[in-house]
Length: 315
Length: 322
Image: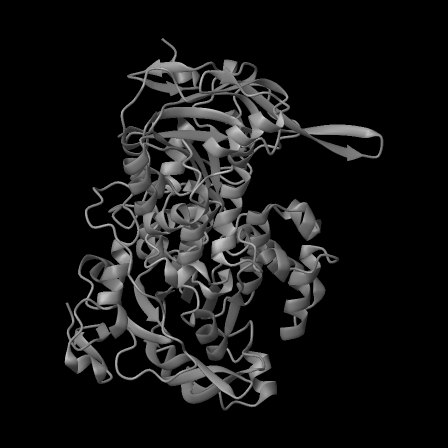
């Protein structure tokens, strides 16, 4: 077990209001796993990621919970120890590489910075690593003297991914790494990520709102709704027979590319206000299978092996 | 599909548009749209599919008269659209051709109530029974009861509701053509279907023609009768939407189809390194896709392929030369 998250609750405090953007989230990530977290905007995906990596800034706050990384609780670790673990043990690829890279430094210097800060390598050794890691993501070494503005969006995103891979950390967290890119570029970067992952055997947590993409590429999938994980399981199984009504709704709400689109419909209603406490199941107002029992909070439990769902009446 | 008349409502004839970029004294041009010809019939939904920067939005804006073409002609209802409208011509054109924008958060005036937003086009077009028409339009876009919405400001509505207001504003003058620029890409997945179905319902009710621009191949297949695939300013393949998606012929369409997310795919085919979109300041002399194409031939490098027709499908590729 690489990562274990127990009852994580986090959110934002402002003007006396508390918004619980992440509620009671628990899940486990094994080694060499590829977990996709899917959900609509505002469901708490990014807050969850940032809480796990302890990057949540004020007014964001972790209210409760534990995050065990290789047995150690990241939330209780002292700052210096945590800082030394960053990049080496786990790294983050953020949403838009256009803003993540510093425009006035050459890309090799930016990667160099990470290496020198977090290791005892000499500059020449670091240079070798940079060459190797850029090659891994498909950037020729002549390009490492470029400034970010000289590269296309896809290449900048590749640089950001390369940076996350310099120390081959066992966990790489990716927050919408391909969202701002075109489909063709997106696909070729996804293929590369998958290939590197199978070579180097690390785990990925991958967050996106592009649900059809996630269903195609991830090994396991977690569906988030209103701050909670409502379903988690092996991707193919979840896609073919979703247990939670929300998962089912999501799957029906994108048209099929190649098959006949039979049930194409959205989900009526909207996400509940997270600054107010929700009684019972958070999806009940939009759910067509709602019964009296749904006013009580459903427990997140394992129904069949490896498949967890928070619903009183799994489909 | 709505009833098709024999002459097209809109026809693009060899449209070309380039944008100047000034660098000191040197002027260079971005060739955004090159030699596009396309006929669109009444009641038809046609989607223009392509990656960002391929010129699909420019094409839409040329028809909307936000930009003017450099060469070629756009014919609307049998008459060439003039470069400069008289006031009367412009009013009539705007009444018949309306637009839906991508981002419902920035395309509605934040300080106006929904009622005022919808009243404005009717006033400009001197419609009678303004109030009745506003209620009708809100009902048509399923914002019911309309009384709950007319006195609200845009910020009080959700993304999906806002997009419905944008659609209501577009249909309120009873246009025959609607230009839709990525109408669902800013919305959450769970409400996209509602907007798509609404667009289809409006077509069925009023026989409206849509020119729809998107990068989502699956959505294009769902909503449209025909798909036109655009690349580096040119239309490379035009055909019935099911045929184009299920059996793509042009090498670029094939690439696009392979790249599109598809959870039903059993074995995923590798794309490999596919190169990048050409620079549109100095576009390739021949076929724009030639530098990335696996089937590239000698003549592709120097000659732009004409359209070849295969079973009613138009393909700009020498592979289909007879």
